[in-house]
Image 1 (cartoon, helix red, strand yellow):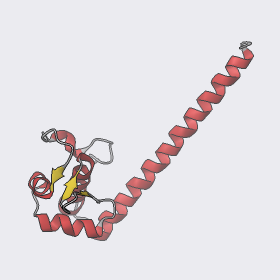
Image 2: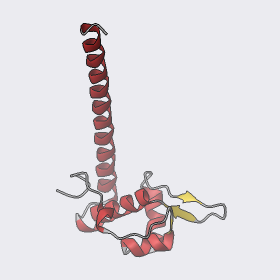
Image 3: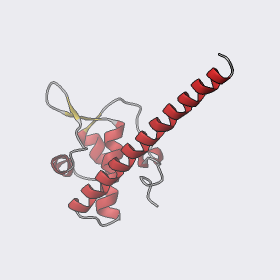
Length: 123
């Protein structure tokens, strides 16, 4: 099971400097890839959209770094093609969305049951 499948972030193993945003050169060094590869991945993976500063420099968040590491793992370690990695990421996104919907349904059910209990207890 990969880190992304068991809910653990690949970033947890890293000791990243405590910054809000990272430059493309920082992310390239962290991931062990060239900056042009990152720029190419931005065109191929719509999920990878770092912010841009007023001067147009890319600013990556920790979530962006996690995604870069996941993409690298899919492509380099697991041997996926670009298309296969895209499908895997879309499947992960769909699964996360479904989990969010289930969690919200459980919360609403719990609230409804608490309301019914309050009515039954005379409150």
